[in-house]
Length: 257
Image (cartoon, rainbow, N blue to C red; front, side):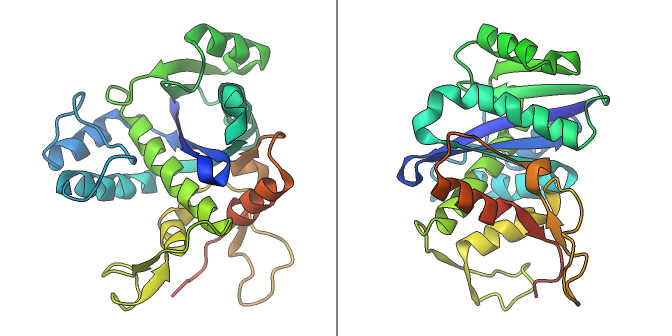
């Protein structure tokens, strides 16, 4: 069984919502172990990207653990204008259908878990799933509690991370961070926040294979994420669509050091 976990991150100042699909094996046992390793209780405590990290070392440690766990999953991204919040559920399902179809997953046996608030109701989710024929190949589990369905915590982290990356692409975030000891760079070297966040996720995005016509020595290292890993709502403005395509449309997998 292949599991899809979905959560969203709303960024009013950028005028967008980013949704994240985390796809792979059942995440419940591995996230539960990560929670326990950080001194937290599964089913009671959880990771929330919106939670304050300062003064909460257990949340910082859990974030690092979840980032490590993401190496075993594939990722997709949804972009919706924040003014179209009411359409999030439908767009989330359209994105799921697109990603599942283009990555040849519709015959694999899927179950999709969506965080609370993605849809107006469970009935709305089931109705949309039937209209889009997703119910023919995917078991839909809408309006789930992320404390219980722990894989949603992975999607929370990815959605927040990708939202910050898109804010930077739009010129709304200019933060610099230290490279750190596991970056491959001088630990004291300052990097753009968006670069640092992208470096931690870049191998996990769904993609269609290498972009054609690349020049040496980069041939075969720039991947075309395109529709295989990115769904942009038709209601997005030209500026937002352009920024989303620039940020997520392709992904470089070659050496960055």
